[in-house]
Image 1 (tube, rainbow, N blue to C red):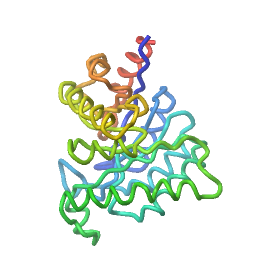
Image 2 (tube, rainbow, N blue to C red; image 1 turned 90 degrees about the vertical axis):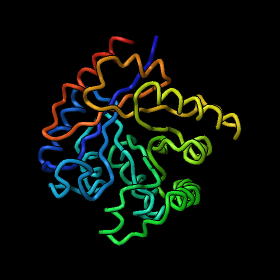
Image 3 (cartoon, rainbow, N blue to C red; image 1 turned 30 degrees about the vertical axis):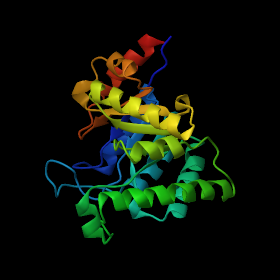
Length: 255
């Protein structure tokens, strides 16, 4: 028996709040295991000045609108919020959702976000060093908040950096996300296993999630074979949910 989870990212660009709410409530009703949005302030492709909405505010609405799926950010930019505040935000939404929250985090990369919103962009290694320093602060705050999270509240780290990011995953994360294709995913998953051995972590403790495009959902077994536990399809407005339906059908057929 193969256990695989499936989910969808509802991308908040070139769309409306009403359309996104319809998409994530639909995905929840269909049986998605997880539903996500992203943490940017501007579109990432297409019309770079199209409509766009802030992710954590959307995530709070998603947490309240849904009933079954885990919810989270794919992924939060670490540089946009104080780590203690971020941990408290995630804990609060864990209660709003009834214990269905991921704390998704990454070092950040989209320079326009930083420049237009007044954050220091720094260098790639500088942003990674900040993430390394902030992850223990998040864990510490989660251990102190009253009341504590309702659920497990896994920390998911997104990224593919072989020398630093995957080491941070091995040291700090409950879940890890990067992108396909399967060959690339499998290679990076193997490197994560090597980091787990180096730091004394059981690699089986880390959930392996993979983000795929809507045209790459036809054979989920390719990603299962590459080591993925959880396949997440990115959806753009107007939010055709058929790629998610395909993933759900394949998931159910593997049980």
